[in-house]
Length: 95
Image (cartoon, rainbow, N blue to C red; front, top):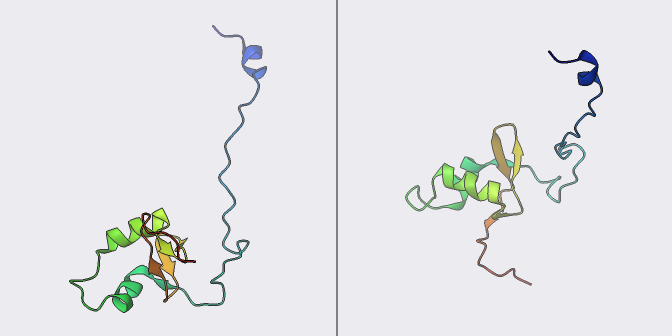
């Protein structure tokens, strides 16, 4: 049987804290531009549904940071500015 005092003498483990990503405290460059959902952006950006990537692909791009300016996740949805552009990783940044 364990000694009750031995359990109390353990040092507490340090907990990893998630970064503070409160949208109210983060200053975004797009703060004055209204944000739209990814599916709305897809309809505005691509001419036909056949040309547009599926919503799962768009979520993957948003999560990986491949949209410029970056997408913002609020709850379960990603939001972007209407003028957002897909930037693949192998494409060099324009000066």
